[in-house]
Image (tube, rainbow, N blue to C red):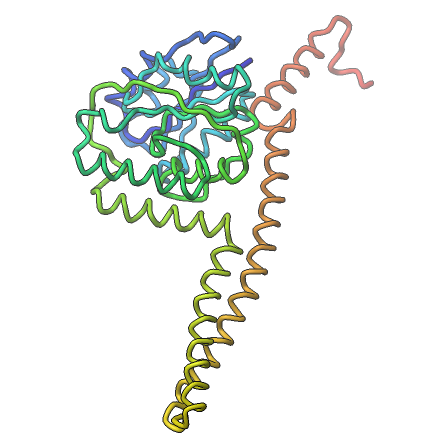
Length: 339
């Protein structure tokens, strides 16, 4: 069993040594622990610091692409390295490395495929009162949309089984935390939540420029993925509103006609007809969107199967190289003799 601990980083040269020092090199239930750093276009030598302080694998993205891209790159790389379980943590040493044992236990016990660390945001001293309230509201909205019981939706300290990681497809360019929970909930990936500790604050968040900006972008993410995973419901509701408005105007016109006052309300007929046609078109779009959504799910299943195929990516290449080397070293093998 192999555990890969991935750390997406952007200019974390100062905080990364403390993060790496706290990570366990041995975890019960695993034969191997690999520490993977994803350097998202850092300009402060984060990659060199990672190698110097014990990271086993470093992947450098040439240009800063955002946390979501770095996280997704980490999952893909971890799967290629042959990970059975993947733990994601932050490079600013926010999360306590000693809690990794607790984080992976539900997966090892086959109780869950995805585990999220619950920081209890209400108890974090350096969070403002407003931020605590926004965290609580955001988690409540994510629970509603995803159909899960997640208590701390924005926690980045989480673990994935190999099967769960293969099904995660991050589309956002902002953050992965909310999107992956919604995906997991909609794909019925078994989830668990464990209490984890946090370390003292080392720096201000680079993701949250302001509370208003974070609320706006997170809200758009929730709405976007609700529409992606519930296209039939979303378009049916929109079409129903438009169609109902058109029907109401039509009935209003008929009322005036019945009472002998229809001559001055021709505009209502025109608007009613337009709204009824638009509403019907939105109903058709709902059916098309639902078919597209079904096709997307099938493509995601195919992608997950490809990610889990043996002999793919880094690990597969290394295994083939090892086999070729062993074949050449066999007694009696002559590289210059065909057959």
